[in-house]
Image (tube, one colour):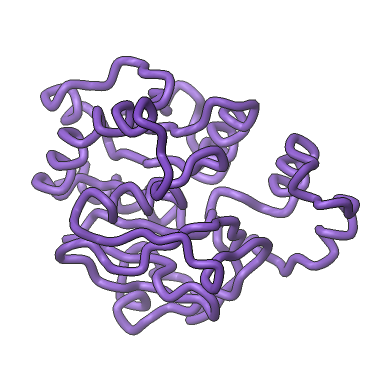
Length: 242
């Protein structure tokens, strides 16, 4: 079976946890996920090798922001641009999550800004647009559902050819789609409440003097958002079956 490529943008202790979250929510084995660290400059697949994958996931990152990348990090991310251009050209199944959502927009003519009015932390009510309801990424979802969010920056202008799929009360671009098989979410469909609890124990500075239990008590049920990864798996299987 072909593998799924994860372009990972983490260098801290959350790297392995992100991989486990994706494996669990996609319902795959660790052998089916090929992880390449973009920031640590691990070797990336060639354009020819890219065709050997079922799909690609652009991961999240709590360490880096599009608007203030260092020169070295920017150069590391630029290594993915030929792959991203090939993904768009071939309409290959792709899912960008949080930072991956922003990288995709930044590369293809969108705009990412640090806007405090759109920043989110915690569980957010996600609202699908008409196009979102029709998208294969959300085919069994209700018009509204809750998902984990944690971002300082936001996509404020869609990339070229993108369709808006979802918004939230604070953030006006929560999800978009390019062509038939390329998707992006600002929120985290790979995280459930236990995942959030674990992340907070890893990075207690995000608690800002409060306890983990106090923060977790404010979260809504986000379990339905995991369906999105099953839907993305369905997109990959559909393309494989052509």
